Amino acid sequence: MHNAHLGKLRFKSLQILLLAKELQSLRAVANAVSISQPAVTQTLQELERTFDQQLLVRDHSGVQLTPAGELLAARAKVALEEMGAAIGGMGGGKVLPVLRVGVLPFLMYDLVPRTFQHLHENATPLRLKIRETYVQDLRQRLLAGEDDLVLTRLAASAVDAEEFKSLRIHRLATETVTPFVGQKHPLYPHALSGQAVDPKLLADSDWVLPADTTEVRRTVDEMLVLSGLSPTIPAVEVHSLHGMMMIVGATGAVGAGPLSAVRRMTELLKLAPLAVLNLKPSQTFTVAMHHSRQDNNPLIPLILNSVRQAQDSINAGG
Image (tube, rainbow, N blue to C red; front, side, top):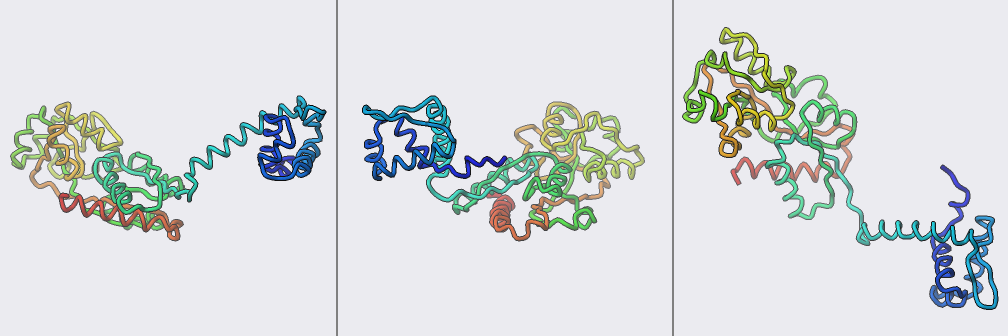
């Protein structure tokens, strides 16, 4: 909201008012700020005209603030302290630009930390503001302009979909979707040995799966239908791969997800990918995506370079 007084204010005038309150002498104020005493007097008079209030009283002993002057001094002290904190927070140098990045929670295990490591090692001039959420939400946030770039997984069949026409998709890695089980499932020994099982052996299993709009869910349903079974109704429906893995690892349920992610959790959660006879392989991509409106954003190439370096390190097993 516009305020005529604020347009006329100078921080130096407020500093002089605070010094007058502290030193109680215009000569002492003049010496402190290295200007003439008449200049100090003029500054304070301008301040009084700005607020149309008498701010000081002058007598033979010096100057004292009036009640209006005390009120303004108290407010001025807060304002100057806030500005000092802001300047201190900037480190006296250039403020780094911020890039808003949305990520799948599971990518926080490797891709995101390695990306930040690369940025740090190369002293890349940007800061990251990271938000973790699931695939559908990442896509909506990107389209709505709430994130500048997202790191996610995308089904191979969706890459050329109409809804992605406004997005720039950068493929980082190719994944294979696989069912997996934990050590409490009776097929766990088969999973550890790599022995393929008949899909009918999964008919009585509880499933933990994402929503039916996802590629993972469609893969599982297709596998069951082609084996003469009905599409599954999950015992638990989850948004995140990490949540699915935690549940499968603690129960006798079956999940499905990217093969590399399952292998990464083999030791920690006692999970193992389950080979299934006649299962049609389904691929998904780890991708970085940004909207076409970000084509001229100079931060995008910087982050993409670090993301690619990070993914190359993961692919090389480093």
